[in-house]
Amino acid sequence: MVGELPSISYPALLWREGYIFLAETPLELCVHPRSLFQDTVQRARSGEWHLVDVEGRYFDVADWRHIPVFGGISGFALRLFGSIFAAPVLANETRLPLPEFKKRLIRAVRGRYQYDTDKAAASEAIEKMQAAETHKAAMGAIPKR
Image (cartoon, rainbow, N blue to C red; front, top):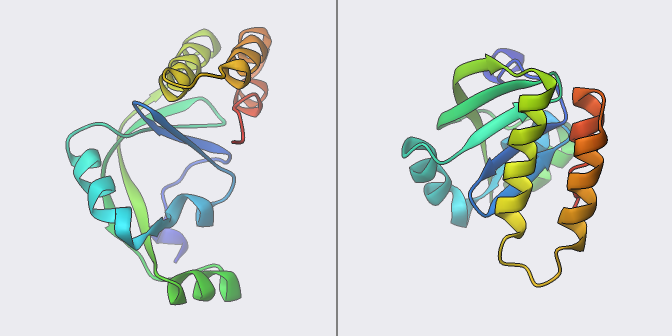
């Protein structure tokens, strides 16, 4: 099972224009609602998905590959209730220096909140990211909602 997962550090931010998801664990990254999975795959194949991990590595998500259920009882319950287990196929790895890492995170957060009427969460997160002195601190500023 371990060989099926990408070699990244957590938390990891998965994003496309208008959407961000902070995965704290491999299980969170690899579980997908069945009803949205085809759209996720199509968007990956068209180059819309990106991922950064807490170590400052940036990847394009080229595709999603089905993997066996994992995560013990939680994983089994997720599968039972209709989730699909798939790992991202990562491409174009780039190690980002902290200033570029923060720019990518800020761009992702702005894209997520661009149409929200309440931008307070985004503003607060961006301020914290700009002040961050490590990749981990910048990642820790990502809004959880």
